Image (cartoon, rainbow, N blue to C red):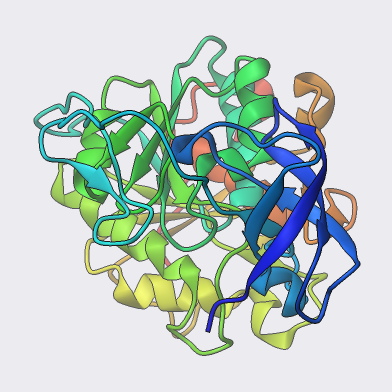
Length: 346
């Protein structure tokens, strides 16, 4: 059951969609906690306002989702019928949206699929290094946070000119373009020099082989291939994660590759490829060691790479895989510093 609680707004960051709240009832009564509101649902609250907020994430002590989400207030004008298209349909929060223009295919369009949102900054920085001025689009799919506004990374990447278009597909909301599903989302981004497909912050996970938000990547691979692209997957790799199922090549990636029926190429950081056995991975895919990684990209882009509290120094291969996937998607055209092997399949 949902935990809808009364709360008082203590302060508001109007630019970032963040607020500070004091919870007035329930098990957190009297406590202050971070709050989030979304402009798609109405105006920003003000300090002193009495609001309702969903505190499930705080009460469950979730990590990324551990904030109180402010429910919209009443009011607003009559909505315009925009092609009979609504987001979050048949829920109390449905709202009208306008679909973007879509191309006919993705033939010739580079597509890299990312397993986690923390790979996005690395991928955008790699694209900026390898192909300065490249127009980068991110197709935001379900599997983590649904609202684009929840990502601080997207705002920073846009400000730095490393990300140019965000398409929110399916029940994801708040992108520059709204798309009905992943197929129309990818086609809405076809004019970009590079399409990245992935999920929002806070991947959903149950610990089971297929019960996780990372499975969105298999849908992205299948959709991109069916539309004429030759998608590249950045595998989820770690030698620092304390959970055995995520060490080496994550069980998320193994499940993704099993479910990806379309053949794809998988970009393995060259330094990690010899440490990860490929036995048991589907033979229909091609596993390619790539010499280009994320080293130096933080300094070049002015970004800081972090995932689950770990930095590039802590877990370099985790971040290298995203950079390697972009290198492969862009054809390896970079210069001496990006030379890598494109050896045969595993």
